[in-house]
Image (tube, rainbow over all chains, first blue to last red; front, side):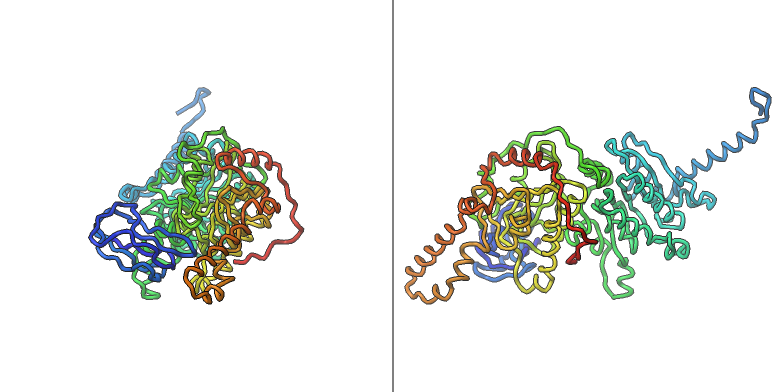
Length: 71
Length: 521
């Protein structure tokens, strides 16, 4: 299991994947918006999306878990 | 035994045999079992490290016979030597971890102090090859508190800082007080898996504060290179660490009075153009490393603190053979927003380049400093001040390029027009403002926007104000008002930078007389 965490405080701008979907390493799975900037959240390894922990519009703090990926 | 004149040579042979025996003991280092341990840890013996470091593996050593009468302490656990790296003389101290875990006795400390003194007199770089358990407790009175005790090593490091380059390669532990050797160096190269730095060991932490933690978590190379920022370069193995140190030294003069050497020009890496790399949408991410490839000589980049505070890139490179220090925002990481750590990282790098006459190139694409309770409590203003002070007081040639946005104090941190860059260049995508259009319109008209009941009318009003704001901060208007000095086509930027750095190479700026600034640390 890999947990993708927020690198900084912001809101969820887009969720680009669905639970159960296969993702490749480096694929953008979510985009946060912070300081008016789009912050891509990339999968660190290939795998299947197990859980999406935040939805569009949610405020997240840095280090909050956003997506869990099964290897 | 007699010589050709019939004189008895027995005594002379005995002398030579004794010398030869002693030297063999010294060169052998510690007992065989400690050499076996090195192999298990995938470490090299100290003398093998030195052979890799120096040109042709040749060096001249001092204090070889230190503690030679003790029997089990050859060279007292440290090799101090002079030799050439890339044809330039350097001084080195290198711990021998096969001898009492590389711990420091009285003579170890004296040898390190002496080689530092030689580096100062010769005005040449000083390298610290660290692999040491710290103080030899049994020798503490002789090596710890006195005038020429271990404290003197750190005092000398501070004295030499900015006078000559000081480089640390960390092969093993650098424990307790010894952890300050890397801390006072210009750069720390750490070998993944073996290098560590900590004030109190995990065992001590458990006993004293009850924390259970591994050495790697507390003070390992990966942690220091990505979290604490105490490490600058993470090397996969010892050979790579030494090669990185040699490459780093190519950018530096022997001391502060000299200038770094020029090299033959190498073309930039072939790839996408800056126009293709940089999105027009100010808020969209892109990879600044790809933009750097367009500007610098291929393969010349030396990344410093690559894994730490990745929202800002700091590294040495060459543009048409000229060495430059690059500070570039990375929109791909945290939107390129500046945090306390990014400010610290850039401030030290600017100080390093300024100390040794390496010109600075700022590539700005910055939404500003981070806001919010967390960063305010962590002292972001204090950290930001460090960066602005370092940048502002640097007297080397400085070129500021506004790649895309430069908002708020981000413009100041990236050597904006008020901070006397030799030139402030804008790309056509540049946008300079206190804040971006969305935030600005919201800040000025939020009450008015909320008061408009018809949604269509509200959208139209916001759009109108956005357009007015964009006209106000139009880059050609900024150029017309002489706020920026030049607008350059992205395809010409590399050539323009090379020409201007050549032109500014004679820059000499006298500073107002004072003892020193009051640093906002």
